[in-house]
Image 1 (cartoon, rainbow, N blue to C red):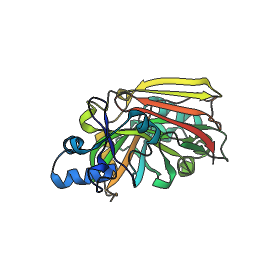
Image 2 (tube, rainbow, N blue to C red):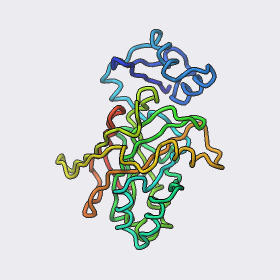
Image 3 (cartoon, one colour):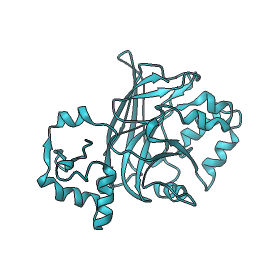
Length: 280
């Protein structure tokens, strides 16, 4: 049976599923909060006294997808560095500048549950691509159109495929194991400002650090709320959705992911998402 584990303000972990079989997932908790008219945090705090505690080591070892989103969507060119990188890779650079400077954001369907992996599971790079990169992103967790939390996302991408022609974007973005999220959902009440979070990326190969970089979500050219508003325009979405908000960390043009690489993405206030890499 699936479990819903929460971590309180003191860092102690509890299995809320032991208080009710109806609380087996983050979506169940969000749905219960909707019914009761209370916040997710308040509902979880009320359940903690009756829940079984979970040793910290077990939480890390057993954690899977923190939330199974029916759909994962993503936004593009929301950071200046991303706009410049996509201009550089493309034979039609003006289309990316138009998006970066325009009012309407780029939004696309990134993954379904079967294409999404969690912490310590392997992300995939396409076997027909020669230039593959991780894209660290802040993920907005949505339930019935409302922001209920944040997570860390990795929008793994094939830069050479998209660079050949922007119309190849779905093939560059949507394939087996192309998306990772985790290690948790930080509820809206625990993230004071999603637009001022430090974010870092490190990549190890054969045990050695081959790339690292950092940025902040304050470099985003738009807001999470604006991206969410555009996502739901004339678009009937499932109850639980994750929206990745674009990347501000782009490895150099000489870098490509290879099988066995370990990718670590950290966002302050949320945690670190770690995934190894395989060819799919």
